[in-house]
Each structure stands twice: as C-alpha cells, then as structure tokens.
Image 1 (cartoon, rainbow, N blue to C red):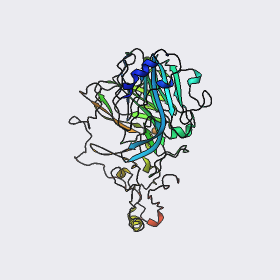
Image 2: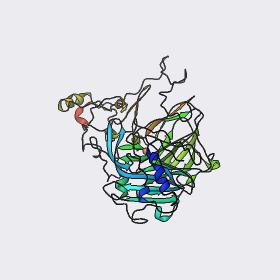
Image 3: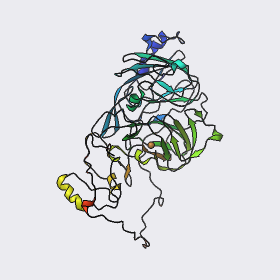
Length: 465
Ligand SMILES: [Cu+2]
C-alpha cells in the first residue's frame, strides 16, 4: 500500500493496475504519476512511511518531501523543473527556478535497495537534465546532458530508472547550463534510508541545502553570472530570520545533514554541543571512526551529516561561521567608521540627503535594531529578535531549540527558552574597578573624512570596491 498526505495517491490505483505487469519495462505514458506541488515556504510535516521498511523521515527546513506511488516494485516520483517564486524571508521574494513549485525542490526519500523511477518534466524556457549526486547507478542514468543522455528539451519528460545501491546523504541538481540553473536555485535533497531500520537510527533528522544568490535590492531575479560576490546566503533558499528553528526533544538522538551548492565553503557551527561527523555524500563514517567537531567545513559540492544527543536544553545557535554569510543584502559594502566622529558632517549631510544616518562610529551593532528606509524587496543586513533583543544576524543562521517533554515528531516552535534561575549572564552592579577605557583618537574635522553616502537603490549595492 502506498500513501500520501496529498491527493497525489488518490488517483494512483488505476495507474498501478495498468502497469502492474510492466515492472522492468519502460513506464507507459498513460501511467505517468501526478506531480504534487506546493506554494508555501513553511516546513511541511515529515512523510512517515506506512509500507516497506520503517525509517525516521527527515524534516526539510522550510521544505517538504516528494510524495510517491508504488507501481509494481518500482517507487515512482515526478519532478517538474519550472520557474518558481520563493519567499527568502518575510519582506523579500525572488523569482527563481526550482522543482514542483519551490526552490529547492522537494526532498526525495527512499530506502536502500528500492527501485526508483523518476519522471522529470521540463517547464523551463531552456533544456535541462538531472544529475543524482553521489548515487551509484548505470552511466546512462547519471544525468549529464550531452555526455550520458540528450538534454531534456522544454516540454519533454524524461525517465530515470535505477536501484538504490546504498543508504546515505545525497542530492540532485541539473547538469545542463549549470552556472545559470544552480544560480537560479535548482537543487534538491535525496535521502536514502538504510534497509535495517535500526542502522544509525536517530529520533530527529533535519536537512538543508546551501545556495547563494546575488539579487540587487529592489530586484527579483538573481544575477546568474556572478562568481564570488553574492549578497544572500541561504539554507533551502531562506535567510534568517526566515529559516525555521530545529525543534528537538531533550535526550533525542538528532542528525543534521547539509549540502553545499554555493561557490564557496561554509564552516557550519553549532553552539552548546560537540557532535560527531556521521555521514558524507560518500557514505557512512564508521561509528568508531566518527570524529568530534563543533564546526564542520562543507566544501562546494560536498555533503555532511553530524549526530548528537540533545541532552542540554536551550536555544542554541547554529550558523555558518563566515561572518559575511550571517548577513543579508544590505551589509556587504559599508565603509569602516570605527573611531570617526561623524556628528559634524552628519549635520551637513542631512541638508543634502535627509535620509542620511551616521552609522558605525562605534561598530555596527546599532544597525540590528535600526529601522532604515529600505527599497522594496530586500532585507536589512542584520535582523531578527530574540527574547533579550536584536540578534543582529541574517543569512545562514538558525536556532536549535531543545526542550524537555516534547512528544515524538512534535516540531511546533516552543517559543524562547525559559532559562533556569541564575543561569543567564548578568550585569555587574557592584563596585567598579579598572573600567576606565583609553579613549580612541577622534577625527573631528569633517573635511578630512571621506564619506560615501549609501543611499540604497538598484545598482548602488556592493559592487564598487
Ligand atoms: Cu558560509
């Protein structure tokens, strides 16, 4: 018996009957499965298996798992490559390319040994193909346009068929006009669960893919030719505060898996725990060889998974450790003014540009709570609030919320952590000693200071260094 939370499988009975005898042959056109789609960037509940080997399904942050149907002993999926609109965080949407209504595409989940038949329909304005990153399969199913198959032209549907040789942490993405198609957001996670339900089993299993976009404030389409200078660093095409938290019950075994399809490496760091690198896109790290880390660097084209026992309650930060990757679009081109007294010329500047705000003389933390006038469709450089104030982050940042007493598979946001009495850093109110600081040199002649007024707008952003 097959299953789905959508209408997808409601129509599958007839198709399954039609082709029940054709288990090893080509799928008949009449039997093509529906392609489920979604228009929400909210995390969908995991798709619990009701047939076949049992497994703990993954949670795709701000994403979903692609429903399938059984056709004989084949597990059938249908991906549609198409233009999509994706909310990167409240306040900004992007026109991307993706699969089945979203970027990234839906996560594919299956079990080691499964025979999968994946229909791929191309609704893009140009040809495409899908490469099954890390899968062991016949060469002609590898999805390299021109090399192992003809490109899938606009309007065509191709079929990929292979048996899953190994369990693990994998992904899919085009191997056709890659620079453009990946810069536009085409990618998806592919998790193959072990046949043995007990093998390396965890209670919660979170997945995300890293992608980067260069979208000028006010624009909607990424600049696809950009090679290094991106301004939006995303997990599953979302940026903080738009990335949903990872909700864990205390004492759960937890796995976090991620892959990198940006143009640079990302050292992923989680607070409060040390953890073990348990899986790469090459396979499982044997338990007695899994090494401890608190930061895992994930190079371009790599995938990593780490496991930990969630035995410490709290709101633990998880983020890329490159500080420019925890920042959104408006922050990458601001000049340094630390130690500069801008009061004098701020007065003059306001006569020329009434919106001008002097910033940065004492660092940039004040921008975390500042309401700057922004052009339409962009995000402040650092934003998001916690229970104690502005978090001053953007980009690749989220929170692992570990709480006592959550039911299995309860992923509802429990709100902020209720810290036990006496466990929060506090202000010293006693006698002051050694608190006088050396004063930084002050440059007070406006004429000696080079100031560039950053009035954000199309074309003015972060390209002039
Ligand atoms: Cu990074």
